[in-house]
Image (cartoon, rainbow, N blue to C red; front, side, top):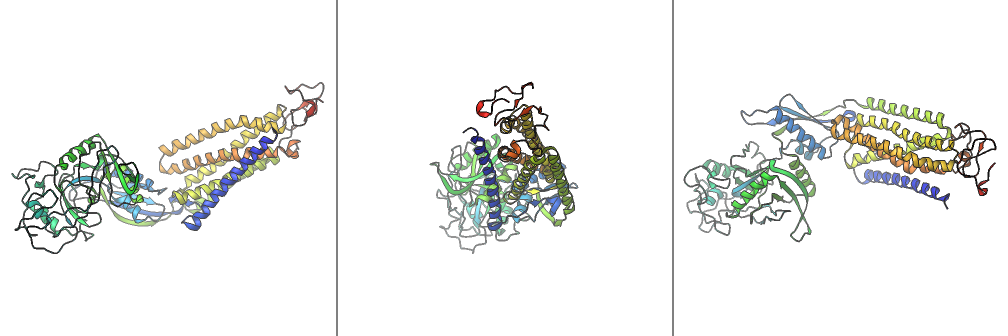
Length: 610
């Protein structure tokens, strides 16, 4: 039973590596047939070229751009590009104003938006709301609705996990909502009776009792004294159906803002920023959990605020709970547009907020990544977008592949000279490792948009030497055991027990080096670090599931077991004494007069002593 066990284990190892190769091949074939997968690895910017986008800061008159702002924007764009799965992109500054983004592909509109959009999330109190498009002028009546009420109801929860929210849907009866809404105090139901004299052309609203009626400066972001006649006129003239209506908007956090819903369905007058986006410590996207702990089909972005943000959010929520609609709504604006404006039914004291607004899961994840990495300190516009040629090109790739083939050829020649026919184990192992590496890199190009650059090709070439080192350590351990007088099968097993520890330590050091390089090095070195780490893991799989099982099975063949001169395991070439000969499947035994090389006596069942 004992002699059969290594054979069974060896066959299982070979079947495992075969199953892995078949699974990867099937996945790649499926990606080619039913998806947009390629049959070869995707190439990086230096080998294939791509698109270069130059971003120019959008500034107001007299605003300057500092080097610190530009460098901060560059770092944030790098994180956004990497989070979006765009591998091998380069982000640099140009002069003292522009940022240059080079991407090894034709970027989609989503990628362009993720790169250039400020993604500044701000929380502002709602002062007034109306339909986004001009409405037919209606004659004022004592029973008319002056302040639209959102159809959705949000009930922010004080639990530590989430704060509920819903997207409002404004449906006012006229476009003169602001003067009418501010002329009287809203009723508890959220609607107000407009003054009969109010009209769309009313020059100035009369503040409600909650506003600063004495003409002094507003006391808080919710104060209706922020609404000036000029702001009312700007609000009434705003048409959210015009895509260019907000192009010239100036978003000053210390001042009120007239803006639109992100889908153009409503327009708002918002107070100054109550909680800014830089107070967000974390943002995650997923399906919302109800009060019973069950997942719902609604997608949410869960925000965690830092200590200062949590305090500010608690203060504004306490204040807004006591107000009537629409002043009890806190709008979340992204790049100056409202994405959601839920009501407050109770104060939120734990620094956790939830944003919902009809997001898809993919959109919510993209937005949460942008919020988590932070807002750009500046807004950018795309100045130019051009196709760029590869910086190295196919010629350098060809030279790299030639260098790899030369290195592989030298390893094969060395193996044949040193190990004779045993070199077939080395060659087939390297071929198996190359096949797994090719399949893995190609699949990663399809699933994670991984791109192979010249640094990555260098890592693959270097990996040939690391893989050969593992074989040499194993083979020399087996030879040492043969010199000690063990039979080939026993030498293979004992040598493996000793060699695998050395192989694990060596590959462990290589893998740690790859991790450190990937984390700390620049993008030009990350390709090398990634392929080095990947090939190190594949080397372990090959040695454990292919090389050792294959040598275990070959040791049972008579050609290798009897120590043929071309087997690479000939005892005479290994320095074993001539008086020593094989005795069955046990150890060597020596002739009379020769030095004993074994600690075990040969048993009668295994041939006895010579």
